[in-house]
Image 1 (cartoon, helix red, strand yellow):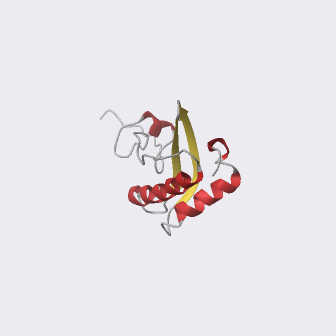
Image 2 (tube, helix red, strand yellow):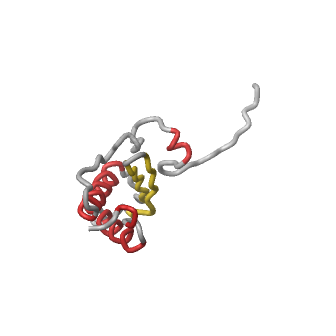
Image 3 (cartoon, one colour):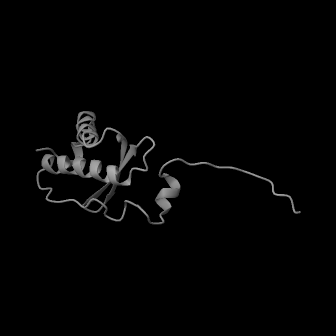
Length: 113
């Protein structure tokens, strides 16, 4: 078992990536953002999904990664896959800062007539 503070060292991130990516031939775990609040750690897993929208495959991959994490930390008893930080199909300022998918900005001038 590991200390939670040491879980995300490089070798652990590689193992988490391996677990997550084993669920799909498309999903690639790019990085994990960690947000701490009281005794909670919120992880935002960022994936590349190729041409797929990927909500379901990312959920499956993240669940597999969390199940692995659960086995690594003594005293960790459960996790919530969504935890209201997932922002799936919900408006979120987090999505404005850390987009989902691709972002395109276009500018145009529309004549008055």
